[in-house]
Length: 290
Ligand SMILES: [Zn+2]
Image 1 (cartoon, rainbow, N blue to C red):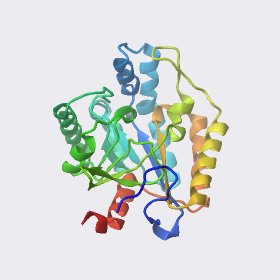
Image 2 (cartoon, rainbow, N blue to C red; image 1 turned 120 degrees about the horizontal axis):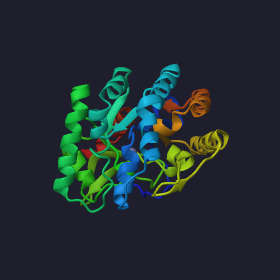
Image 3 (cartoon, rainbow, N blue to C red; image 1 turned 45 degrees about the horizontal axis):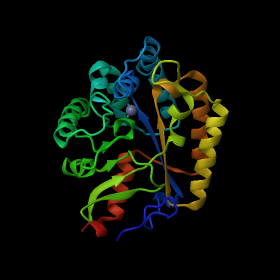
């Protein structure tokens, strides 16, 4: 059975464990300097030193604060990590896994190029999966396109490679199954949006490509609380928070994020990793997939 993807319709009769009205996934894109390197490359330029240095704030400083805060609230999170970040910051990625968080695929070089071939994407996945497996010992089951860019063949390719979910789309507030040629794939999409992304509010640079955003912590947390409340009121929705240790990992922002986590807990949200939510959705929809 299919349901319209129109952002107004509740999920296909999904209810969350414990009767929770909303499932929250706290996710991190652990991109380090490759966030900006790939963005610049896609615009035909190179990054300046300050962008490079700010990217390093994630692995050097911000990540530890993020991990400590997650421990404080007993939240298990999903980290999307490009393969090259595993190579360059291996102890940090090992620490993420050691503390019980999920590692998921996010390109090798954080490639955000449009129009690549199936063969190119397959090679990127193979390389990145092997690096993540070298840390966890198991194949990743989740994928988020760098800059949320995926290709027409990506969902089928992910399903064939044993992935359970993708988290690149922005088209609705509930998880759905991808389709290929009118047939459902056993691949769950967990959409998010720029309004739940710290990059939208906190990236400020004079270097090309220029981005100049600097909101107060109160405004950002206020937006997230309002969005969470609205979706929870509708019921059966998901809220995928998308964070970057290099941005959210600043001292005062982590303090504000802690306030938000406390709010989520006080409202009884079901907080889980993307893998847990995807497995739950696949179990609920196994009749449709049979
Ligand atoms: Zn990224």
